[in-house]
Image (tube, rainbow, N blue to C red; front, top):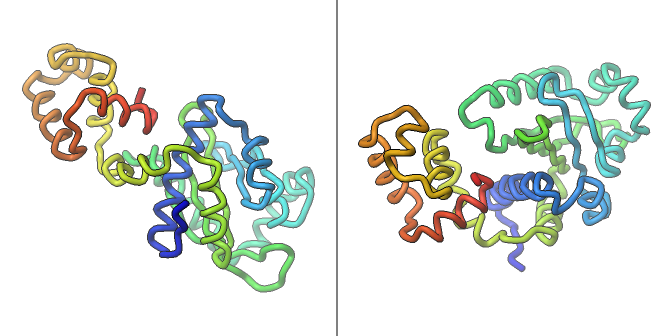
Length: 237
């Protein structure tokens, strides 16, 4: 298996992994508990409510980071934020995530660095955080990785996921698509013709044709079967 060592590759791989994990959770291929077991609880993961970022689920790794039982964490959340986070970083990161969730790119992952006291240590350390909206569950899926362990954690996550080569190749193309282009890919993959797509989206047939030309150029996909695979890989159908 390919091992990531370059920082840019590592962060891009984590974004793809978050997308794949969301798909597997939504399709019932794996549960959060099974994912936690597969990762031996070593990679911290959590889910939060989309409306107020309130915690819903924390695995063993996430609880190890905050070094307290789940119930105690919930009942002392404000105290935890004040003590564990470097002043101002929690509020700034919540604002960053909420702004992202309100943007056109809200379905893509967002990553940022938190400065926290990890594992009950006294000094503040960098915690790489990747957040991914799950539109189906209306939850925010998060992966937390201490900066000094990021390469090992990334390669560990890779071992439980399938289709990594395909998504690695096409992820940049997917990330550059507009919301409208994704809608058109979905309808094309479902067998809709240009005039039907135009009716569905309340746009002209010529606009649909132009979008198709742009998609052909962007995705470099020529066969219909390849379009279907792309749509399936990125959960567009």
